[in-house]
Image (cartoon, rainbow, N blue to C red; front, side):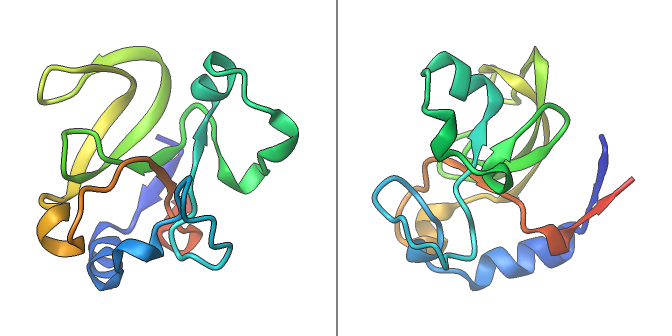
Length: 126
């Protein structure tokens, strides 16, 4: 991995957020603390308009990001070209790192769906 993640601080930060603090298709709030991410594979697969995707929301290979990987959770996955199995058996193009929040419904009142960029203050480049 190209990054060192400050897990404890990131978990504490996520626990202070609300559902509307996560940017998604229906919540395009530019000031949301958790920015929606776009994986390089999804951009190519869904033929997304690349001119509308900014570099700060691009999830390139080797980059960790937050996703609801296991269902009703927030986990960290590192984007890869190779496919790996998640702990629940599902295969994705990414390597599972760890679960940060086990129950989004309990914490945020709803399941969160999508990809989010880890804020830069929680990442150290190696």
